[in-house]
Structure formats: C-alpha cells, structure tokens
Length: 236
Image 1 (cartoon, rainbow, N blue to C red):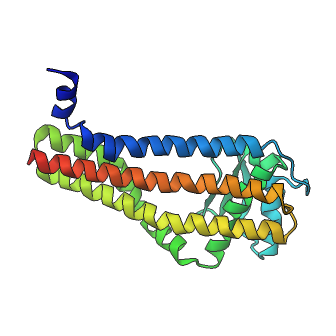
Image 2 (tube, one colour; image 1 turned 135 degrees about the horizontal axis):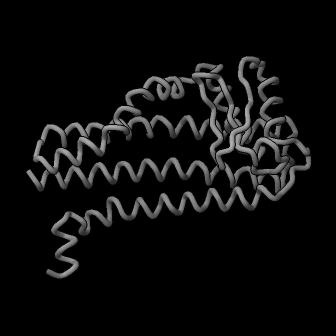
Image 3 (tube, rainbow, N blue to C red; image 1 turned 90 degrees about the vertical axis):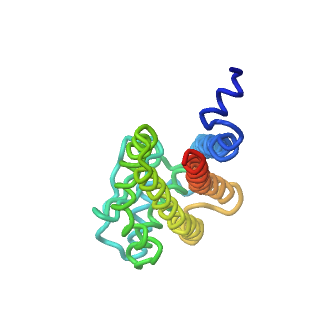
C-alpha cells in the first residue's frame, strides 16, 4: 500500500488537507503574528510612560467602574477579563510595562469590563453559553473516538453537536473581541495614553493580530466539523 493510499484509507486525504490542515496552518500563522507584534511593540515605550496596570485602572476610573480589580498573572499573553469574579488579569509584561503593546492589550481587556458594565448583549450571550461550551469541549473527543471505535452512531452525532456548540460560541466571541479592540483604540487616544503616529499604528497592529487568532480558531473549528461530518457520513 502506498503512503497516499494509506492516508486516504484513514480519511486523511484531500478533505483533511483542505478542512483541517489548511485551517491549522492559518491558526499557527495567526499565533506567530500576534507573538511577533507583541515582541516588536512591547519594546516600544509609550510617550505617556503609563504601564498596562495603570492604564487599566485609569480607564476603569474614567468609566466609573469601581468593582473590578486589576491583578497580575504569570501567564505570557494570558491576559483576560473574568466577568464572574470581576477581575482583570494582566500578564507580567503587560501589567508592569509602559509599552505600546502593553497599553493596547490592557485597554482591550478593560474594554470587556466596560462591556460587562454596559450589559453589552454579545458578552451576555457568551457568558450564558460558557458552561455548555465547557461541557462540549471536555466531552468532544471522548465521545467522538468512542463512537468510531465502537461504531455507535449516536455518539458520533453527539460529538458533531459538540462541534456546533463550539462554533456558536466562537461566532459570538468575534463581535465581543472586535468591539473591545474598537473601544481600546478610541479610549487610548482620547485619554492621551498613546500619541498619533507610530504609537497608534503599534496598538492597531497588536490588536488586529490578536483579533486574527479568533477568526482562525473559528475557521479551524468549522473545518474540523465539516471534515468529521463527511467522515462519519462515509462510514455510515
């Protein structure tokens, strides 16, 4: 048996390359872009000399949000806003550094806190679907592999349903992330934390690269769903 025939026999032919392989490469490229942008603009000091943590606190104060804490986390690019505990977690490089990249990321995460305070609808939808998405993500590969090994079509359908839940979650995530970046770009200029020119360009590049990772994740999940759907149909 040739290698091509072997790959095709296990469902790893053209469909796999198109629906799984290509999105995977796009995802890796998106991750490379965001890390590259952060490294470049993380070395450019903002003229305001404001750290990410200081920027987050100033933006929260300006928005009259007093119940969100800003804390430091050791995870590289692990910056996030936790609506359940109302904690804005900034990685060490963002929390302590007055760089263009740090200000962009800190303002983006603060944008989520502003969304929460304003009851921004897509954020509310994402928060509502998080528990279901967590369950779907945890059980996905177990039920899918078990379904194929034991030939239980019901489990395969459950796995495909899990993929759909994740797709819906990622679709809802896109407007949430894009809106937070939009707010960040406006607020940073309005509050004078970044200056027109190189600093604004840097913030845009960092946030646009980060947004691309969410698009890539959606494309990858849709590709996986279509591939395994076709694989399950061929098997049946």
